[in-house]
Length: 462
Ligand SMILES: *Cc1c(COP(=O)(O)O)cnc(C)c1O
Image 1: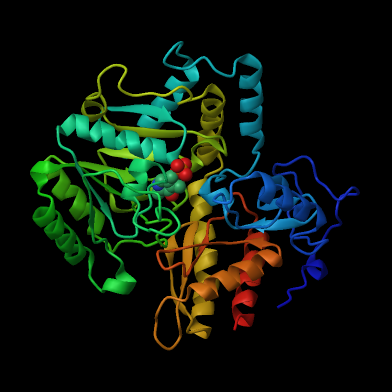
Image 2 (image 1 turned 135 degrees about the vertical axis):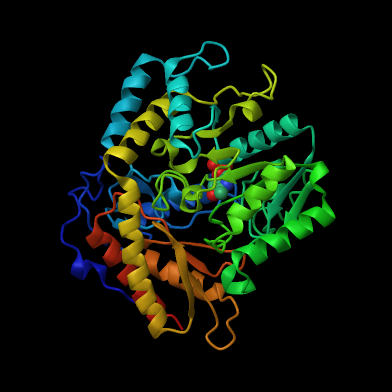
């Protein structure tokens, strides 16, 4: 298929074919000056194949050199519309000037002391901000780590220490990371777990609410899940229930209304720690600062990462002081957790989420995506469902005749969109979901153009 992007591109490639400075000052346009991948990108991908472990895959076959606003620019001078944000990380936009300035200033001051050796203000300030920003006005504490998976592991450690119990319940379609414990929590075997066992013990799986496929309302789905937990685990043995308020890698599944509150209420009755994994949904992504807020759910512990620091690696566990403080002195930490550069970036990014009203931006983005994709659904029976919240939206593709998941179609559409200059990610237990996670700073004209390219890619897909 062909989508001629060069016709619609407003600008020219920079003279040497390469943009070197990123940030929102980059021309906000889709611009294809070579095929994707172009020669310079191909050269890097050849080096990658020879030097980088095969297990580390990639979605877009490009060599990125700059990004900002709503675009990623490659080494050949192509400018691609970014509907992925590096998997929901650059919510404030790539290389946001406030983040760049904060990181540069901190780098000139000091880059590391190890917070457990010589504490510094940035870490404490991030903890204070998270304690204030997360749902609930109870007394809170935070601890900082490097990755989402590392924070999930620590949330589980803290819940076990607090309750003196060992079992943890995760859900069908869950994704919590790729480390040993988080692989066990993650539902999907290929590609995340296959061949990497044995897995951490005392992890149990319960059915989630998946309205398109189970037809249950929130109360029914919660009763089903709680029934399984009570029969197969028993509350007396259960330290924590962990759930993504919108299931991310599993397919942007929004549980039916009432499911999350019922689960949280059951946990509170039983003394089970309710952990919200908001690694993907957090920081304005769903149109609220945290996705739990949509149903007034107040988790005991909330895990954050991805969008927290404008692209620098940082993660956190935030929660009830009495739960968080259950761990003894020295029981939590890590060499790099709460690195000063990442903390400086997070403080700047959290300012930007508020000052640029990015929760509202996410709502507007969601409205545009919903409108465009619903029109597509009305015209094409292969669009099984359009769902999500805010700027975390997905289209589930199915076989028009049977309603069965169509992963091949999702892959075809995503590859065609990327070839036409639009970075689109897929997800879903069945691999049949196109997901849209644009930077919350994307200009509307780029968002619309990107969605139009996806629509053309779907129309032209066999
Ligand atoms: C990405 C993700 C993780 C893992 O985060 P990493 O930083 O990749 O370790 C955990 N939970 C959810 C919901 C995620 O989306």
